[in-house]
Length: 423
Image (cartoon, rainbow, N blue to C red):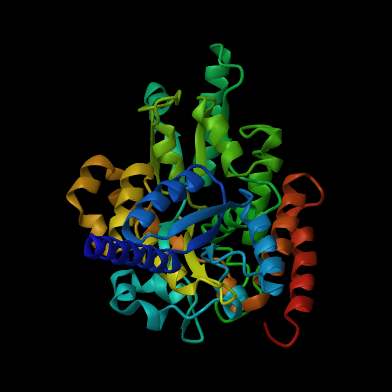
């Protein structure tokens, strides 16, 4: 009996010891993320799979939908050395501005890095340091109601002027038929980063440059750029709701998904949601590359989201494990199939199941190839201020507070002062 009791005691002690070790190895990883569309739901569901695989738990810290607001909060937390957040979900443009606060992932991930598109890895590398690892790529496209275009014998527009004419014609005819609340075109014109993306697309596709060129030259003050913005101003109140001046992505999608628009500019995430069970336009829409200016070519802003590990984290090993998990081919496939996220792993574009269930993914490569980067690389740590000055000038123009030429002349002077001797 004594021997048996001794064995039981020893076994119990062993189990308790193992549980203690297991508990010590299991950490809670806090991830800060924006909340557009399915962002939070995706992370929460992935957290369950992450826990099953590693034992670590995931805590999702819900951030505002606006990437501008997210960046502002991130900068405050990181400047204060906040240890409460282990992983930050970051926009593609933030790497140069936040690099000093994140660990170098390159030596910790080995051959995982080589599985991603080289261009997206390069976009997250600052002075040889891999600041963040990509989770999905992004490039916006033109969403269009294929049923309405077919009804009126129209093709997806190739130019912005064609879009305006087609949107106005269908809008007016549908309103005459009783659809009094239908609008021609929805886009994002609130004063935030989303407007920088929209306006850059109008300008770049019209041959008006990239605001600041890759060599650091400030190019915004030119007639083609001004004409592109003045054209967009003419849409407000005619083919686009007056409320567009406060629209962000979800505002536009909300109107679009109720069937109250002919065209919409938005990111890939809106495709799966538009075909959801509660959508009024399920099966009634399609996508095409964004229109171009006269004599120009389609230009979609490069977007995408990444994950970075805070150097102030007390759980860096677990945080790196989550980064490796969340950016893996398996997780990217789940997001591609479920929410039409664009993978950053090239092999997934040839995946048979993705081709069958999300044919959009392969087609979006055409959009991605026409993408243009925001000037975060040349403006470095001054990008946020550059973008803020730009979207303010554009929003003022769209709202009727001065014409584009005058506003861009003032913007040019502000950017030159911001630049100083160098960016």
